[in-house]
Image (cartoon, rainbow, N blue to C red; front, side, top):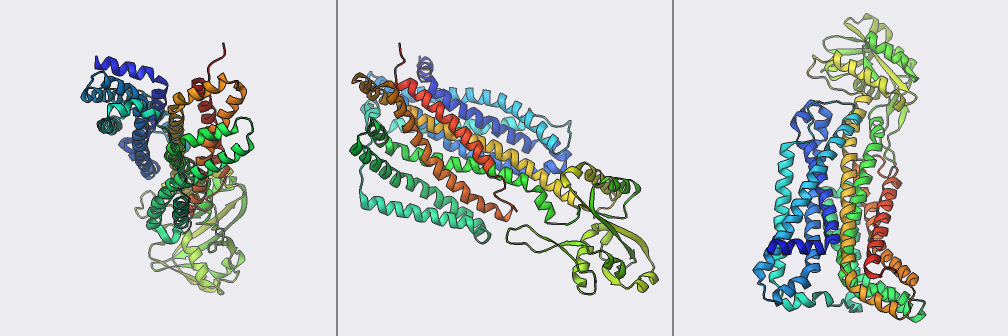
Length: 600
């Protein structure tokens, strides 16, 4: 009987449960995907690049878990508010709280199991697709990658089972604190705005101070470091909730007063609707603003890391190819490059030093990396033609060109042509090449780098110090960040939209009576539809603006990691606007179907 009541109750609120289900399925599938990429040992150990970016997916899993916990608890509280009248009627008819609690527990577990099953199926498909795309991006193929990974499956099931259990217990605890009368009449409680100017001004100023402190901590992250991140997290979160709870009700109240004086069409009704529910909206709008910032920020950071790969490599070396004693195969590949600049230096190496011919060095002034400029992009400058003028810079430049196993503990010495000819020891040469288009030359540069690795494969002290190796390493990390940023951002935006839709649709049943009354007194359907569009537009607008400000300033935190933090920042902004606008029109459509009767 209890199971039948629980299922019938879920059926009666099917649309609202679908909203929750979609958000949970999205979070479960993405969480499973992250765990599969982070825990798949055979896949990770097969490639060093994959191994280097696994922390990115582990961090993504943690962030997604945190936001999913908040979302689940928040959404369940709304589901409880939807059913409270029904539960109150059961209790009035003699049902005990223990039975009602059991019904709620069954509902929560059922929706949890459904979302978990669907989410895991979608997660396996997503893990397969993303894994293949990631390997393609890294130009790496693995037969050990398993999209269906038992450990990831168990971690996902355990985490979300605990989450659903906590949600059920929270709902039971919430039920135990209210009486049957409160449950029956709970949805008829009006939200009144009580404007106390002094208190509002004080809290508003405090919210601005908190936001200012948080913004400063993010902008000056170079000095504030980890403490600054913690301070920003606390102050911006508190400032945002305080901002929405003080200034927003006041702004809506003033707008309503202005429309009452003008009495244009039914604008006063639109703002009265906002005023009526504003106190219950402030928390959800503040939450949405934070989720907007997190979602758009995650996508923006992913794009920034991806687009900074080449800039990052350019900050380490001026030349695209730097090879000591190239092989015949490497020389053939170098000949195929579209070169902007190419030259070589001879050297002699004995047991203590490596010698260079000063006269040969003076024939060609090489580029070297200068200190950081104001835009954080290091500049290429030419060394003086005479090595005697600044021998230290010449030595540093030449030392950076040697592989670690060739350089060893040897000192560099720049000598005259006569002295160089007298020296005995192992002869060698260093080749420097700068191509016209690095991206176009990547296939050839990759082959040259692979041959260089094979040449030094028996040297345990060898490591890649050429531009392509640095580009490849950073690009691998950037690809992982792009994937994490995109899917985290998508999950945050989906949950954000679900929360906002959930809150708006929760109050739609009560609003239906007011719209029916306006229809009966002759207000045209077109005007009511316009009022709905305007009301929901304002609800969506406020968190979007605050969230955009948060993410725009918050990107400053990544100045210490990125060269061009705002590179193509418009891309994630446009993606956010498309997703946000889509959810806006879906919300309007669902709301209209509830509050306005369909035409006969």
